[in-house]
Length: 255
Length: 238
Ligand SMILES: Nc1ncnc2c1ncn2[C@@H]1O[C@H](COP(=O)(O)OP(=O)(O)OP(=O)(O)O)[C@@H](O)[C@H]1O
Ligand SMILES: [Mg+2]
Image (cartoon, rainbow over all chains, first blue to last red; front, side, top):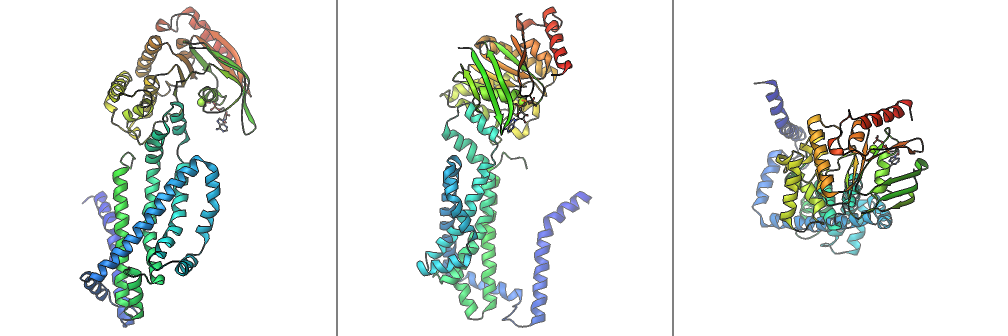
């Protein structure tokens, strides 16, 4: 085996190695503590997870959380895309939006969650919370992607009198897409986390957050961890999906 | 087609005056060359004429349609070579078929027809430069601005492109403003040569050449005389 090949294999399997190491440490810790309620063995958590798979409640909770994630994501994404393009083309709008963006970035997540629980129903508050946190991140990222666009290309399009519609669809959007998709990729896992956090506090029906809260109240740590593993898997799948979309859409980029 | 006349033009960037008291005339249907050292303000002049930057003073006779061979090639990285040409032609030529024919023809002329479906990142610098020229030539315009269009090209490709450029210029009779560092190019291709120098810069010398451009040689009497004069001006230091 050549050195090169060994290196390639190492690169490929090193993440798996980390996961394996983590599981071993977890197992050792569980043995040392020897109290299921504090650190349950990994095997127990995974068997609980498998048990969950057979329950309808699990799937409705996943479906609920997922749909809340998608709805809040779609609203934040659409609004951020629309407003960042508008703000880029019309600078006063960008200036007008900047305090909103600054405030919603600085405001403690918990304040938003608690306030929206007071003001809204348990079904809608996770949506609002996720939008309030995700939208400014998307807006700032999309705006800077537009801002960093090569000004030479815009000059070129202007000189050759290319129609504004063509400039937007063939120049702006494709060229900001790589950074937009990078931002979406990290935004979507944050979105899942925020939706779950809001569900915990708002006690939303048919939600992962609520069932996590129930396992905590019943001191079922293994079940809580099983839900956590499910949430991680969910985020991972969503990120993977965005990665695939990026690979497909941005074929013109030299890797 | 009208002459393009710049009078008393001044351009400053954040208080730094680049050109001042600038007068220049581009005769309609002729090739005019702008010579000057690096950083003197040649690209700035092209950008003023192309309407990409504002300036004080009067600029008259700018036509509706302009082609520009930019100093940086300015090819859209997300579009293929033919997509880049199509991007600028779409508004001008409605028929997709006709655009395709024009694109194939001009890519053939610059020797890159087999790269029609490649992306800019897959081209060398000289190839990207030729595509940028192909775009300017294909675009139906009355004025072509060229910022060092032949740089980075080997002799074979350069002379092929010069022949194609001259043939196109003869056929369509466009007004051309050519920026270059290269005195050979200037004396072989132009009807008139302007020297840009000073800080702030203005036109400090002008040379006219009347012989037929399609059969000029550096060894021709009048050409070599102008060459020597320009060379001396540069050597003296501007
Ligand atoms: N956008 C800008 N902002 C500030 N200064 C600029 C800008 N563009 C050009 N300049 C300045 O204007 C001067 C002339 O620049 P220009 O690009 O026109 O030179 P040039 O003659 O084309 O040089 P070169 O042959 O190297 O391309 C330079 O001193 C440069 O620093
Ligand atoms: Mg320049």
